[in-house]
Structure formats: C-alpha cells, structure tokens
Image (cartoon, rainbow, N blue to C red):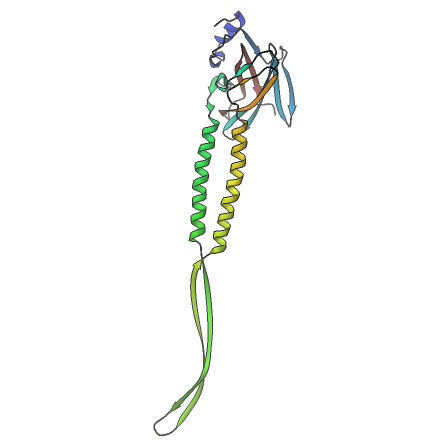
Length: 248
C-alpha cells in the first residue's frame, strides 16, 4: 500500500487503527476539521459534513436511532471513470470519552429479525381473537292458570307467573374481525417500513462516471459517546468525518 507520510502517521494513531482495509492503494487522507476545506450545513436540524477529494465528493450526516447510530452517506463521482463504493470500507470510531470502534450492524439481518417478531405478534393476536367469546343471556317469562279437581267434586283455580334465565356462549365474531384488521394494518405498516429500510441501506456498488449513490450505514450506539468519527475509503482516499454529539 502506497502512503504519504501524513497518511502513514494517521494510520499508526489509536484512532486510525479503526481505518478499514481496502483493496485499493490509499494515497490521500482527508479529515473534516476547522483547518480543512470541509464544508458543512444543517438540513432538518441534522448537521451534514462534506469533503471533496480528486473529483469525488462525500457528504455524511449522523442520526441516533434507538440503539443504533445511523450514518447517511452520499457519494458523487465527478471523475471520468467508475468508482467502487463498498459499505465494509467504512468504520465508525468513538473518540471520547473512550477511543474504540463501534460495531457495524447488518441492516438486512435487523429486517429479518423484525419479520420474526411480527409473525409471533400476529400469531398471538389471531389466537386472542379466536379464543374471544361472548355470552348471551335470555330471560323468558311464563304465566298461566292452573285448575285442580278433587275427588269430592270440588275445584280450585289459580294463576302462576315465572321467569327462566338461560346463558349461552359463542365465538366473538367482532373480536375476530378486529384482530384480522389489526394484523392487516400491522403487516402493511411493516411492509412499507421494511421496504424503505431495505432500499435505503448503502449497498456495494460501482458508481459510473458523473453519477451518485446514497445510503445508510448502521452501527451499535454507545450512549455515553461524546464524539465519533466515520472513516471510509472511497477510491484512493480516506475520508474522515468527526461529529461532536454534545452539540445539538
């Protein structure tokens, strides 16, 4: 691997130990800091950082999503040849309070895990609906006249009144219908969310000349982290983007 002196020093530092391996020869290192030509801005409250290499622009933003750190990566290839953009050539490092690598997360695996949880949830909802019962109580009133005849020829007449209560149990069809509607709505919402997640993950691809690519990278989150840095190799350049998480 051919390295300039400045890049070699960077690779030997504790932070640079997290720089990914690359099949390409790395000749340049760019870091987005105050003393560089780093560009930045805010869109919908999120900070975006941009570095421009040799006819290649890389823009990155960060967002905390529950247990994960989601990095939005945009690469513009303004050169005359195709450019490989590979997710495994990006790593996320915590800079403070500790220096350590943050593990990457397989987005497709997360989707498959969510599908299993959805299936179990639907099974329980369907079971609950099928076991639901409703009771119907029916009260019947009866009345009439009773005549009695004795052997000596005397008779007696009287009236009577009474009520009979009967309780029956049958499937609760309304509960079953509600369970079916819940399952359908849940499936539709998940299909939409999982489709979006799958489409927007950063995939390994070769970006043609004058074309762009964009996608998300997921990493495990350390809630105690105060600053992090995404490092990625695109072409023959290492691009590094530090983010101060203490600044809103």
